[in-house]
Image 1 (spheres, rainbow, N blue to C red):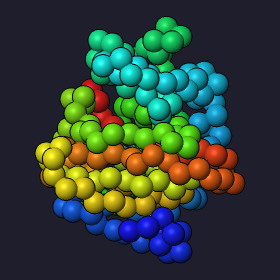
Image 2 (image 1 turned 135 degrees about the vertical axis):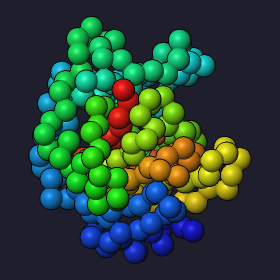
Image 3 (image 1 turned 30 degrees about the vertical axis):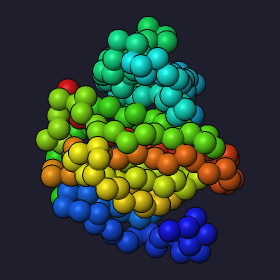
Image 4 (image 1 turned 180 degrees about the vertical axis):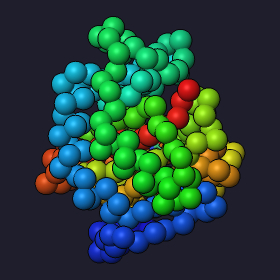
Amino acid sequence: MTASLFDEVPPMPGRREELCEGAVILRGYALADEALILAAVRDIAANAPFRHLITPGGFRMSVAMTNCGTLGWVSDRSGYRYDAIDPDSGRPWPPMPGVFRQLAQKAATEARFPGFEPDVCLVNRYEPGARLTLHQDRNERGVAAPIVSVSLGLPAVFLFGGLRRSDKTQRMQLTHGDVAVWGGPARMRYHGIAPLKAGYHPSTGANRLNLTFRRAA
Ligand code: MD6
Ligand code: FE
């Protein structure tokens, strides 16, 4: 499938796309909250700036990250983990804004995961070329809870695999305002983001932003 085909057929806001049992994309679901979300991300980044974490293997991640909530996802030479303290500042992560929590809870309920109480929002910022290699989200104690993932700005190709790294991957486009919800039998599926294509989006400029809400504790 080509990028031009994606470009010509933008997903319809309000549409619900089931990827498999337990995984759904709610197209355009975050659009109504766009301005509040972008303002909140600016506030969060003013207190806990985006940074390129180092993987346990010693590589600098191409995606820049920060967090809000009672815990944040961090990586360094000693491994991946959740920590209540931002290692760069020595202070707690900024609190999770109400608009974030409400959006994540509503989207989870819409995807048939009622009662979602996220304690982490990992905020990812992609520049052209930035990517996330295939991975499972498995540092969370609360794997019974889903993950809610909000995409803003430039579109990205989401790679969606199976329960083993070697399983075949599907590719789907995530565009501005899309919310993916991911849980139950899909919770441990491998997934990633293909290298971001350069472009301009009126809301985020040359970047893509992604918020992923989890229950880590
Ligand atoms: C991203 N997302 O979209 C990275 N993980 O930038 C993820 O790694 C992810 O979108 C679990 C569930 C949904 C996701
Ligand atoms: Fe992930």
